[in-house]
Length: 52
Image 1 (cartoon, helix red, strand yellow):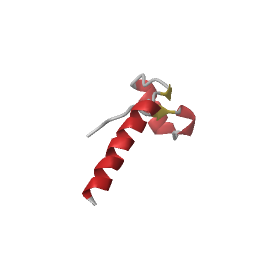
Image 2 (spheres, helix red, strand yellow):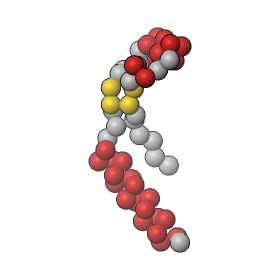
Image 3 (tube, one colour):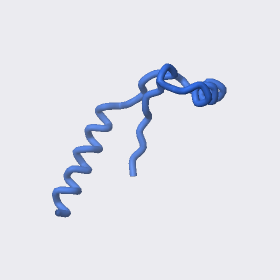
Image 4 (cartoon, one colour):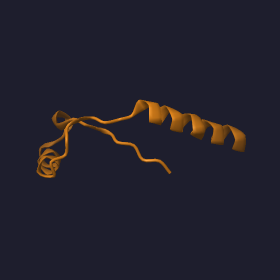
């Protein structure tokens, strides 16, 4: 199981979720690591292809 950081855009949130993430001091921005996601997706593809 893999976990990746995501993207936080306050402008796309409704009022209450925006209030919550600001209260939690959640940083705004894009924290995705596309290289790590690419490696993981290649490994996942290899697992799917070898099991089918």
